[in-house]
Image 1 (cartoon, rainbow, N blue to C red):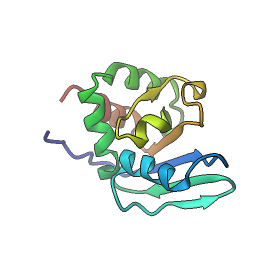
Image 2: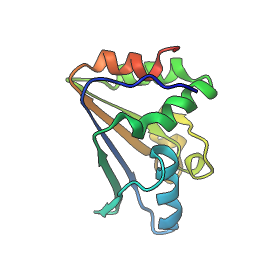
Image 3: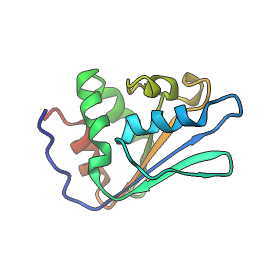
Image 4: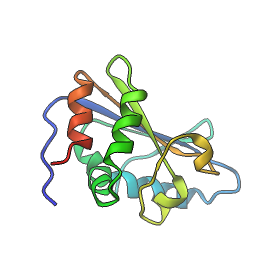
Length: 135
């Protein structure tokens, strides 16, 4: 699939809780399935975090939304969660571990806590169009 580049600046942030019962290596793998391999993850305050400044980290999600035909759901959630140049979407952590990106409408849909993907950009509408457009 050819992905059109997003031209504006953006900040990609990911965080997820680390439960004591979880294998932290598996949680890292889940996030790598969302963002791509080799991302630099930091552990702090019982959470795993990532911050990046390149839309390429969003390519796995870009492709998954089209493959799973969940563009409309993702668009609605991103619009509903958006304010002042910032929005977020939740992903099921267990599904991400096995390489499937599943959008959650609320935290309860991911029993061990969701992966929260937050985006900051100057032109939020343009970003949402890029991520969830039908191109």
